[in-house]
Length: 211
Image (cartoon, rainbow, N blue to C red; front, top):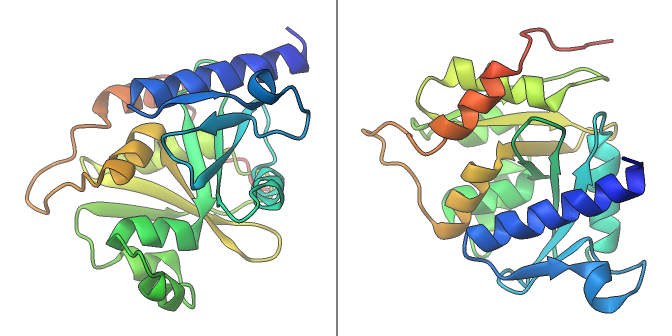
């Protein structure tokens, strides 16, 4: 399968993922016929812009930069996966902090941007935040390793682009849970990710690729 056809396949799959979670969506080019249209248009989330990547090796900071450029004022997300792995969603840390506190004004998120994601997430006992570094960070393996460390807590991976901007990557299941406002109580385990994460741990090696 060539890269163009694989890209279309990824767009269809992410469209279906959105639909299955209750958010009407369609492929952007299929609807408008323009090469400049978004990869996937989600009428259920009109404030969100999705850049969709279905590739073996992804330059995630570059994909996020592209998503920001094309977002036209919307919140920028990269939905990405590779063969045999579940969908992941990456966003700027500021956007994740808004989800974390249901921060509609952005004031708390803006304050948290001055520090590390570990500080922002530290007060939430149900949440495990892992910092991952490396020029060749394999985000799927990083997610799987973090899942093992987190036990039954919700888990995220924080990493930086070349400019030092913090990015947050979560599983698609976690992304949709935040959209729905479903945050696990502190005294209950998070079981919503278990099925998805078994697919992660069954396909992973434990080493990150750092150069």
